[in-house]
Image (cartoon, rainbow, N blue to C red; front, side, top):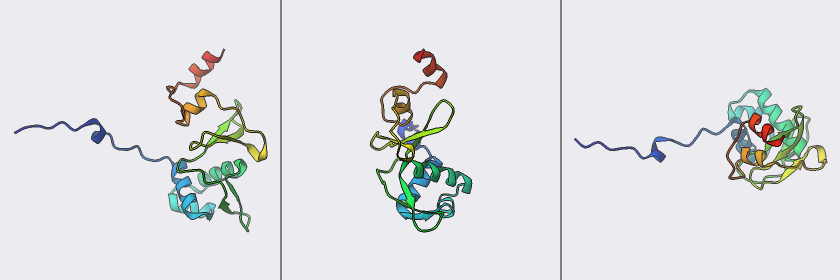
Amino acid sequence: MPTFRVPAYEANPKPKPSRRDLMWRAIRQLRVFDTGKVALCTEVDREVARRFLVVLRRAGYIAPNGGRSRFRLVRDTGPRAPMEMGDENRAMIGALDRNTGVAYGVDGGPPPEVSHYTRSLAGLGKRRLVSRRRAKAGAK
């Protein structure tokens, strides 16, 4: 009986979307939402959804809509979720739009500079991913 080899593209299915991508997809479909609805639709913890919504609000992707915890989507740039950018102290300094490659500052501030390392993490560049230690060693 002949044996068949499974091609590599069939053996490796698409990776499972991240929680951030699932929440972004739900937000794009709902348009008007609250923390509980995003958490319920994506089956993530309410605190995880709240933290992601804080990032989106501070970067200008969502705006308050009526009540304290209700929001609406004001900047829909595409299917890939924005990526939070932080400084060396892990403080949020902006968000990188993975669809357009544009960085947005926090609370209307100036946009942060986007390094090649950050672009590669976001899937925007063709450079290989490197560890933070190697990236810092190369910068010295």
